[in-house]
Image (tube, rainbow, N blue to C red):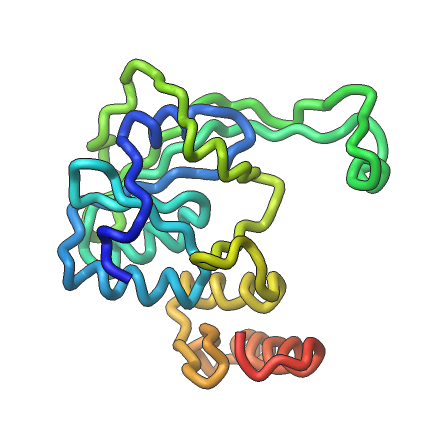
Length: 217
């Protein structure tokens, strides 16, 4: 898939979206060349990530999965910026009942720390923000239409909606962030080390593949 096939969203919509409560993080990576994008596209396919082009630029944005996005930026030696509203709440009663009925008497706010912006240089070190978020807000029509939430594990398969084995994918994503090795046969990232923790993680993944009857993710 070429970059021209990806959805293009304005920087204003991305920033405005990130200022809303209870939506995933937005991570923007500075100018990405066509050659570099081949790697971004490859990793995005493997880890089922949602990538968006920033309109009228060569920047790309990831919705959710900020740790993975920052890892990709560091590997490409690009600056990145993570933006989100740090807020969380829960139903006043049983979470199970809310999940079944969609009803709660009221909500309990667990955390409200306001809008957060974190920027990183080419080595992954924290720097001052390089994208100005002090803009006139616009309605993020497209991004809101995705109906993504901080309370839901995000899986993106281009052209196929949201699906896949969430448990195995979660492990694959974590292993990628921790410098894991891609297992082509399994289409999954495994730990790269040989210590007890890594061996246990490797065995856990194999058990999950067997449990679900999958040969590949």
